[in-house]
Image (tube, rainbow, N blue to C red; front, side, top):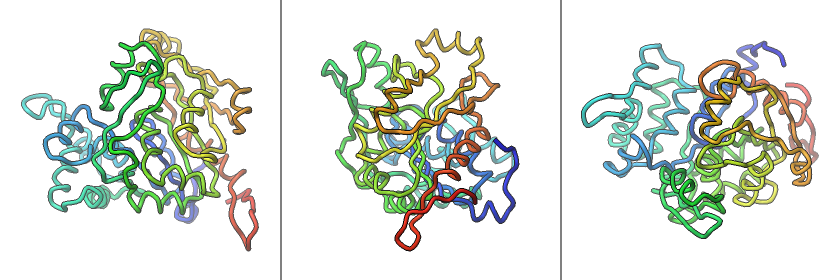
Length: 346
């Protein structure tokens, strides 16, 4: 994979990418992709109800800003001081644990009277590359139903409840059921040259987007390549014991026929010291079960996309972006005079 970044003209004319998800996994991927294309849209879940986001949601009746803020931080083109301000967390008093970036969004939400408009205005302030769009404006809660029939409401409650039940999640749903998608989210998916799902928490960051009315269908109906970016590790309290095919099956069950074309998995080894740390949390490197993936009718591409440094097993933004765009260039489809044409070069 080449390390060469595109020229300004190539960057401005880069593919329209819709990245669907939430959490740190999505923001990590965005940090790499923004170097290769200006036409980048993050469609982000708003089902979080924990931490500082949950406090603002409860106190102000606004959608949780945390995942949205993470994405805007990743796409921001600001001075170092502003970057530090956005990520600063108060350590004392009633604001302890709250992020300053969340408070900015809360203030803009009050000024504009609309969370969508607040996100748009903050995007202008931060001069972000591309766009960040909440998948819905509805006040939604995430409910998980387990294989033993037990259920729990609240995204932040799921991991602990799963450990108590000691069984897998059967499915998740939104309350209220099938909330309306923001028009901008559906438009971004419909216009995309490439659609990415993940990486991130399977049941609490990625799947909630598919439960919003019209989103899974819009992805499935797109002629763009649709790639699921596999996590590097299983996740404690959510996907213990899962393989890559288990992740894909969960996405397809919650989504729609034709939701995915391809799965991108990591081949780079994870530092042994990190593995020991994750093992204490019952998390291990994701097993890529190739035969089951093939039986699902999905293509598998394996690349060394994990970071070689850091205190967590995460994707390397540049490696991941290069792998994704390599796949795009070799498989992208367009409709040209009524025919499907493959684009091999930008």
